[in-house]
View 1: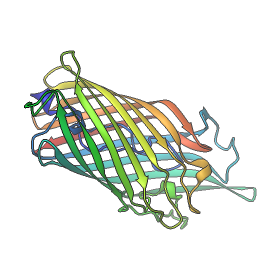
View 2: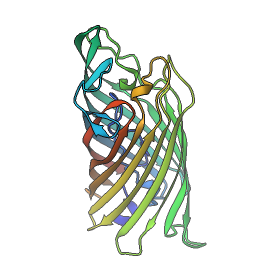
View 3: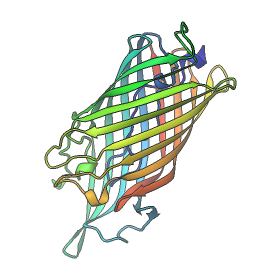
View 4: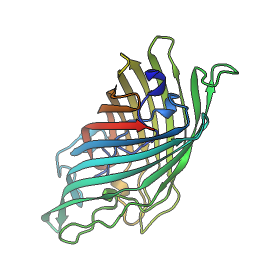
Length: 319
């Protein structure tokens, strides 16, 4: 059945901020189908996802401000993020599975460097592989003994973010980009969370919820990113055998970065996003999906750039 096979799009549990800090951003949309209990058959699947996020609005606390309105050493102007995320997922059996995700980042950043009363406009445009994530999962059905599928599923996610991305990118003048802007953090982060999902007592409707903590376990060259705590919840309606409509609420809380290369005053905060989306079954084993993510709450520490929307497009295939 289409519904029981494609309950979303990919097991990645990606949980970075869509619109926090002056630099890197990834969408908080959850495109995981396994955590919703949709596919427990052994096998592999591939996913390619594109994200577009323009951070062009400076924000102080919970309010928008103009560029330079709040004096800073750097007045942030804009960060344009174009991310490609490739993932390979393998389900060993109805209980165990693992996924590996590798992002490719294309990032453009502009800010004003205030140097002894002089305004210097700095610009970076670079691309490169980001930090790889490896996430295992253990899940169990519920709904009655002797029923391997149950009426829902719950379980644990666990793994690590590995320091595979560079953190030494420079512009044409040889100026290094801020550490929060770099493709990688240079640190290893532990990932731990839980998930649950099930069918609603209404035909063709299902739900999911997931929490995931990302906890850096070390610092690297004077920088340690803040802890991240993500909470996602969503509904799915299978309108036809091919079309499904989805709605998500994604919350993220991020602690301040630390270290001599960090900007603790202007890092961290919390946000809540609303994400309507749809998916289409091109064939039984190939599905395309898209989400538009819109901010409901964005509160930052200090002054940071935020985005007023984010776009996610992707395609998944199983084999």
